Image (cartoon, rainbow, N blue to C red; front, side, top):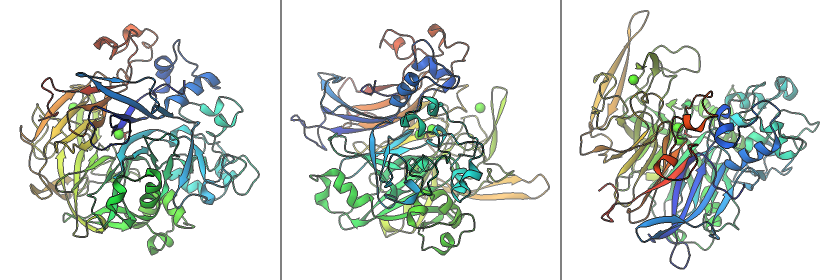
Length: 619
Ligand code: FEO
Ligand code: CA
Ligand code: CA
Ligand code: CA
């Protein structure tokens, strides 16, 4: 079970292998696909998607079912090779690897050994089992795999009286990261039995110790990081790079790599009204590190010591990176939470972002760096809590960088906020990776082609290229194409999720515009924003549309750009629970209906795209 590929394939990277099986950056016929297995289909349905005869959805959950579900989450490495014109995977490759919820993983960087990560499993606060809800990915300049831990909070439960049992500031942190007392866990894994591997999902304070070494009160502080794995060497440790901060991570994209300069890593926190971050290494780049003897040691050098910044966008088209440092008076004196040290700032990066007044964004998903301009593109997938007249602290008013709040119909249901999402891009100041100032604009606004041109369809999308909820986003280094993938629920009354090919210009190639929102009690909220050059048929094309109910995600290509691997996540996910016992009634039966496999249950899967003439994809 723990040697099978997981479920819900998400971010993915290709690691070339030479003909003799050594690490390469140029080989095109053989390689390793490293990928994330984010989740399983909603638990009420997953019993049928995952368990052959349906599962037990009441508590306690049977250990055998929990074991299977835990094994489905994590990472995979699978060897693939070109055999004639076709790609195949190698079931018996020595490189094949699974990382799941029982895999020992190291905490690395400033949080390692801190009081906040002491658990019964690791009384020294140096280790944790597994990596969870892995979504976007990244690839380091030294050829290792990065994986972002996203919606991990939902897997943990807390007792209804845990606030009083704790009686300390950890309650503030837990609430900020989505675990109020009394929260139930997504799959009930903590009920699988008395074994520690189940008990760890209950993060209530149950022990008598002062430091948490006799329970799992701190277990959730070990999730929420960028995780580094050497896809080529399964004997090397997997490390959570805590210097990059703890939040709902998506992808991690390196800025342009310049010898003698620090490295910048761009990242987003995918939750409504959360932040965009940049990490800058203390070490400066050495060309010799592009092909090091020890890749994980190279990760230690660049990813364990540096500065973490959060983005603040201004209405004049500029912005600032604000360092999240315990030395920052706004952080040291923050009334909302008393930070103990820099590790505390990193573990509670959301609270640190609050302290410095960072810009609340429309759910930052993937980011990627344009191969020639070096500008950084962030997909902002959507935000149902963006409102012209916000109500309560969970909602935010439109601002320059998140300027839309509107109403869209899906059938007879009303959708509100930034329904369709947008893609923002940032040009760093002259200091490059280390810059603390930038300029920005919005590359594209997602919209339905028929939506109001003056307030919603601001990029002028037509029916051949309109899209909603951009999520996966990556530039091809072979072709320069900006691949955009959608994870949408707003426009799915008209189209399934899709993948588009974009050829962007640069920051400032469009126009300034002002959106006006009438106030209920009089007056107008005017929001200035900056939108890039409108899309044309030559600069934005729909490339593929996926099966019903699926998200399109994962972008990995061979170095020559002639094979493109894409993941189809959770086809048929929206099957009604009353239908799932009968496989013939799944809303999607992909990929069996495409000739792969005999069963009718839909399955997440990886596809590979090649051209009949053997050319580069998308050109
Ligand atoms: Fe797993 Fe933010 O998508
Ligand atoms: Ca609609
Ligand atoms: Ca995503
Ligand atoms: Ca998503």
